[in-house]
Length: 120
Image (cartoon, rainbow, N blue to C red; front, side, top):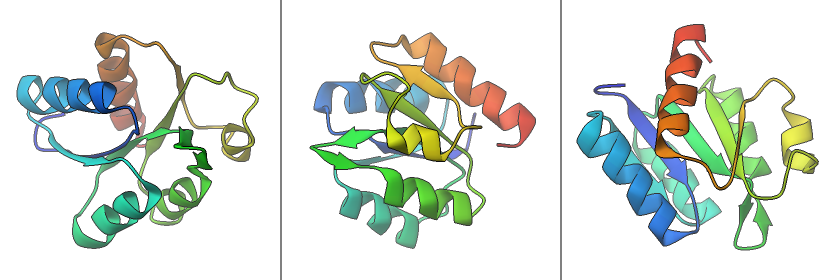
C-alpha cells in the first residue's frame, strides 16, 4: 500500500481521521479525505487516485455518482456501510467488496491489500 494514493469518501470525521492515520502514517499511503460528493470529485479531478473507500451514504446522499466515476476510470474501490448490503449503490456494483460498519482498521487494510492483488 506504500505510495498508493487513496480517496476516502467518509462523512464521519473520526472514522476519516482514523483511516488517514492508519493508511497514511502506518502504511505509507497518500490519503485524500472527502466528506462530500463534491469534495470527492474535486480530488478525482486534481489527483491521480489508485484506490478508494466509499461510504455508501454521505450526509443523506448516495455515493453512487462517485462509484460510477471510479468504475469508468478503472479505479478499484470498496464500499463501507452501516446499512447492510441491500443498498441500491451496492447492488449497482455486485463485484465490489463491502466493509460493514463498524469495521476494524485491520479489516480495511486486508480488503485494500486483496483489492490491489486482484487488480480491482
